[in-house]
Amino acid sequence: MDKREALIRRYFDACNAGDHDALVSCFTPDAVHYFPPGLPGAPWRGAGAIAEGWVWCVETLGSQWTIERVLCGPEEGGPDGVPEAVIEWTHWKAKQNTALRGDEWYRFDPRSGLISEIRAYYASPAQQGVAINELHDFDYAGRGYHLKSS
Image (tube, rainbow, N blue to C red):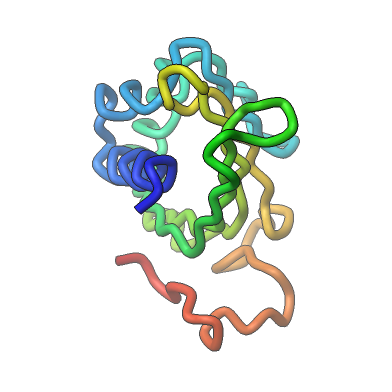
C-alpha cells in the first residue's frame, strides 16, 4: 500500500475512534482543512484544531467515516513537488440519521510525509431532511459503495 494511502487510512481510523492524539499525529502542526461554505469555524487551522473538530463530530453527531476510493499521485509530487492524493468518503452521522458523501484532496509535507492540507468537496449541498446527501441518480450500490455505516 502506498504510504500516503496508509496515512489517510490511519487518519480515518483516528477520526472514527475520536482519538485526539492519533489525529494530531497525522498532520503537520500548521496543517489546514478547508471545507465548502457553511461550516462554522472553517477552515480548521492547525493539527489540534482539526483533531478537536473531528472529536466533536464523533461525540456530538455520532460520526463515523468510510473511505470509498483512494488515488495517489506520483511519489515525487505534482508540478510543485508536493505529494498529493484524492479520496471519496462517506460521513455517517448516526445521531442525525443522515450521511454526506464527498471527496477530499490531500497534500503532504515532502519532508515529514504528514498531511499538510485537506480540501473537502461535498457531493451535494448538505440538505436538511435528506437521509443521505449524495449525487442525484448515481448508482452507489452498483459501484460498491457503503450503503450504511460499518
